[in-house]
Length: 114
Image (cartoon, rainbow, N blue to C red; front, side, top):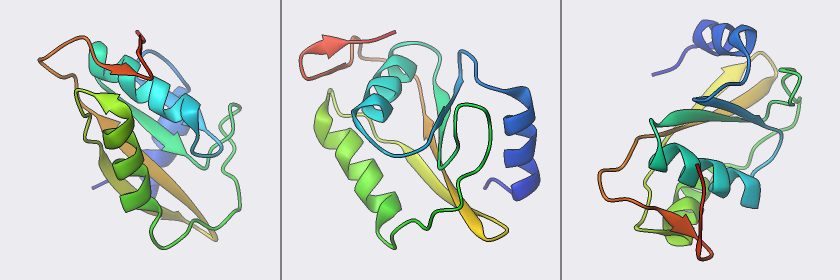
């Protein structure tokens, strides 16, 4: 389970080969999940701008299940993310952990990413 302190440490470390910040869930999150699944795995933090600032926007009650389902249904073979909701003061961050998959390549919409 990720704590607010762990999230702050990730924010300080910044984006890299195994960490991406995304303000909102979209097609780019799925592409990043595919890239992580095809390489060494990684974590996507949703609700965080590229500069590491946390957005003060609420997430829906079904956000975790929705994000996990959207990634799984959009990927072939299906990628199943571990999802965590972390309260950061008045804001929330969703952490999606993607493990490297043994059966490669993973694709979305017929395209593979690394």
